[in-house]
Image 1 (tube, each protein chain N blue to C red):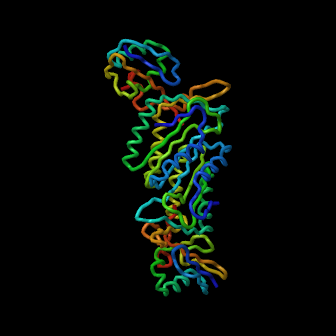
Image 2: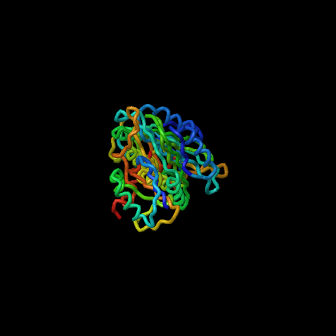
Image 3: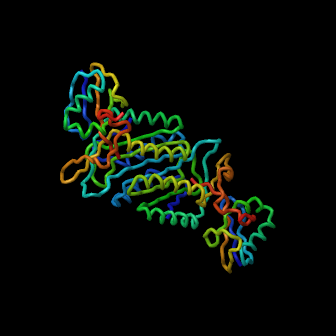
Length: 73
Length: 73
Length: 148
Length: 148
């Protein structure tokens, strides 16, 4: 099982699901209509490191974070 | 009469002399061997405003200042 | 480590403490950048969410870049609410030389705006409204939506 | 007006007072640049001569440029002796916007180094030695020697 957490303005409780790569996570989230606005503009971190490809493999206990557009300062 | 003052590291007391333009001042200072090292690299101000040409006219009571290379901060 | 505070920053305390902390390290230039909440669009203030693990990773990577140039970075940021005319952000560089300091503070602040995992909300009519229009997608964003 | 002090600057007093003075003017960015005397070449410190009338004219011209962009500049500098690890120079910009502030502090500090009528001396073995090798002729210099 992996945990998916939604940061900042995304008003959504964490999910836990079975996934062997980020591609599996994308498939699940695309079925959630309230996530549509976020998938196009969120960065993705695996265990608090940003990742660049859907082919990133996942293992049991991993944490995937979605980071929407930022504006510090 | 105009007054010539020497700023910063130029160890020289002010001069007063007759001059109708900066060209006259340059002629006088060129005869002073201790000024040779400064004439090439000093900026010149007339009454505390920098000037760009030797043709700058002078009148009685004017103050000419020589500003050697700077290094603030 | 980034210094995080609940609510507005105590700017005098932070910028003078940082100056004192580095006083003996022979830096020739110290440039703090202080960001203050502007009164505009009828907001009462701003509010911030911060994701600390990735923020510290981003900051540590910058610190390594700074060290390679003999420089050092410091940063403080608010979480939660900060009212207009209060300050929410300080970034600072210490460097032996002026040029390195001037170039680094600019690059550090700009990359902060584009990359640091902090989310901003307007406080307006007692609501907390995500500042979507002023926010920037992090480089590489969108892979879950099919952008790669 | 430039603030001139005999000897080292009281940096905490100056940078926090400037912050307080501008707190209600709705500036979003405040960037002070603080210059500190580095221990190098076995100097005991630096010493400065300042020619105030032309310095203030130079500063006032910069203030007009800043005002055209909605910004404000402040500056403090030492006269006389400043020992190693003490500070001799602070330049600061306040601006509504970050970009203006970052660009202006760089341009202001660089033009200061090239143009402000201040002369620097090394304090070494109880002597005051003009720092000729680090000094820059003001733009347009040399007319008396025949350069025009």
